[in-house]
Length: 315
Image (cartoon, rainbow, N blue to C red; front, side, top):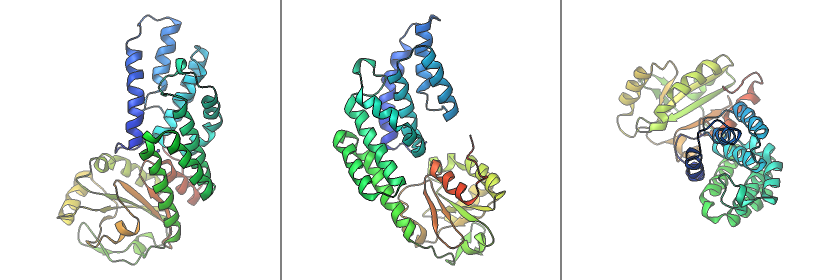
């Protein structure tokens, strides 16, 4: 999952990567096979890599003789950074081998075998969650915490997410709740989603730096999803002067989508358990929650693809 707000997981990965990057910078600069291998390995750990770039770099690293252990570490770090559940589950057999054969002298960023084993348990928990195996999820996530208690906050995030998703499956949203947009016009979510496949709502506030940084991405989602019958809207959560602030931002960002104001009672914040923003909610025309999470979470595109198989996540 790439989150703009630094989560404990992101901070942990930064700590892992920093000494590695420093070590690479300290290496010699001559163009020889050893230097080329070091350079490719450093590129493997770059946060900006796409999945396709990672695959190409992994093959190149293998040809240059980079230890298999280090290549798997890079793949694991990439999957953890992106919080890409599908990718991590597919990688699980390789991570299990890495845990069984971990060699500290070959380590690129992982501190010890226990850290690898904890991530094995973490991925198994994610797999159990995908299969709605509650007991399996509990077992494996607790194993992850036991093996690496210093990263308990990382794994607790998954527990909280698991509980939230279970709650979201059970609720039905009142689409008739009266709303106004930033220009004072009255509407409802039901009015906006009528005749469409779903409505995607971006919850934001002017004081939220990551929210503002994701405005260009919101525009791109609008262009792409409107063509597939999905309405994209935004809902402002500023506590004071929400109407004027939202209208100012709408004009500055040149937004052409429904620019809504959440009522002062915060009915949606409470129902969706929004404790951090940016947050996106995908609702069906009947008020079922199809997705509740960060705008950059790959699971958003999984949910959208279930609505229309021709929808593809941007690369």
